[in-house]
Each structure stands twice: as structure tokens, then as C-alpha cells.
Amino acid sequence: MKPAHRLTLTLILSACLLGAGGLAAADRPTVAFTAGQSKAGMALYRASCAACHGSYLEGGTGPALTGFGFRVLVRDTKATVGELLRGITQQMPLNAPASLTHRQYTAIMAYLLSKNGYRATGHKLTFAAAQRSLASPVRPTPSLSPMPVPSSPLQFHREVLPGPASPMPHG
Image 1 (cartoon, helix red, strand yellow):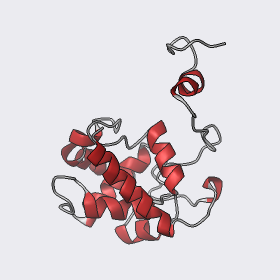
Image 2 (image 1 turned 90 degrees about the horizontal axis):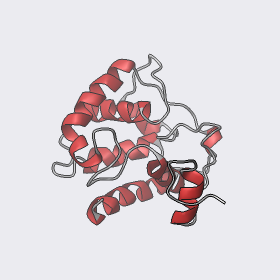
Image 3 (image 1 turned 90 degrees about the vertical axis):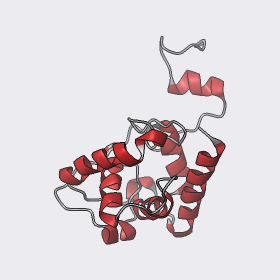
Image 4 (image 1 turned 60 degrees about the horizontal axis):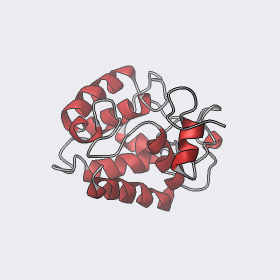
């Protein structure tokens, strides 16, 4: 990932600290969106975001928008759906900031939520509702929250990538 892209996402999520409050992950409310919004968001993501963030949100020249690294970033900044959406709306795509409509950005957010543990509810996510949301962009689950942060690459390989796929010795 290019330092400029990492810095941009870090600034967006760091700015989220100002209004995130002190809710524990398990106490954060859920967020509503429709399957149709998520489907539309997937198409918009592919057209406007995938070139930098990867076809599967895995990251590329831009940071990952799902997975371990994204979970750590969201947890550390205490970002909410509304704060993340506001930052994305103002600064993305990087080559054409604020070039989509609120409806399009909201659809992309619904897609991101669907890829980060939320299920469609049948109730439409609106830009205004997202702005009021205190929900985390990553749905807390008992198996993943609270999530330890490895203190070293060796610890990461031993604890996050255990088993025969890991190149690091176990023992």
C-alpha cells in the first residue's frame, strides 16, 4: 500500500475519533440496509473503488476494507458507520473526491457493511441515518471481538496464521 493511501485512510479514521464516544464494541447498535443497496454498492465499488482497494476489498494501492487490518484500524479509531461514510464521501475516490451522489456512497457503504459481518435487514440505509449511526463498520462477533493485536510478525504468524499454512515454527 502506498504511504499516501495509508495516510489518507488513517486521517479519515483518526478524524472519526472526535465523535465516536466510548461505547464498547458489544454495546454498539446495529445498522440497517437492504440487499438491493448492497448489490448496487458492489457494482459501484467495482467501478469506483476496486482499482485501489482490490476486487475483494483486500487492499492494493489503497488499504484493505475488510479483514484483520481493517478490523484493527476500525477498532483503534473507534470509527462509526456515519463517520466513515462522511470521510469516504468527502475524500473518495482518491482521483475524484466527492464525485458520487449520497445515494451512491450509501450503497457502497451497504456493500462494505455486508462484507464486514452485517446482514441486510430490509430497511433502507439513508445518508442521514448513516450520519446518526453509532454502529461500527465491522460487526462485532464473539469469535473476533475483542481482537488481540499481535505485537510482532512472529506472534502474527503463530497466533493469526496457525497451522500447516504458517511458515513459522510452532512450539
